[in-house]
Image (cartoon, rainbow, N blue to C red; front, side, top):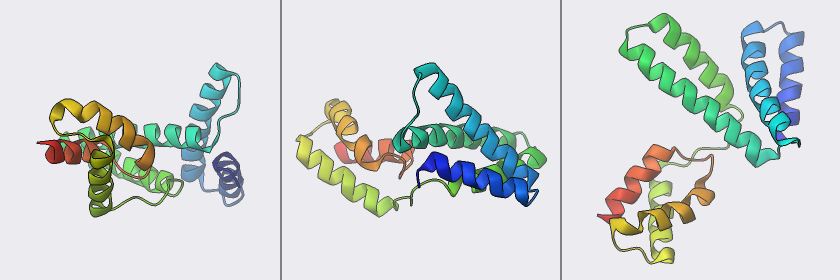
Length: 147
């Protein structure tokens, strides 16, 4: 079952169980996916749907950080619940040790030796960990490895 089909099925289940919060979160994600499909005039494959999910999660994490900084725990709690719902659709996240190993392997493959080669490393690395690791963590690990 594709990711889009899974979202549709979960939306139907949320309707049947009258889980309005989960239903609204899934509808927001499906609306984002549909907007991109309309813009590109084609249906998205699983990796593109995963990109949309990543973007939605990143937006919510950024908002969550700002709400927590401002002391708005009421809004932060809602975003945490949304993130929990969206996390179900993401692939299993890599641990920091696994990401470090992939970073080291990619640096050796590319033959990078300084921070000037960071673009080459990131270009080769991102497809390997797409959707399975946070971009900020990857960036930090590459910088540490190249310095």
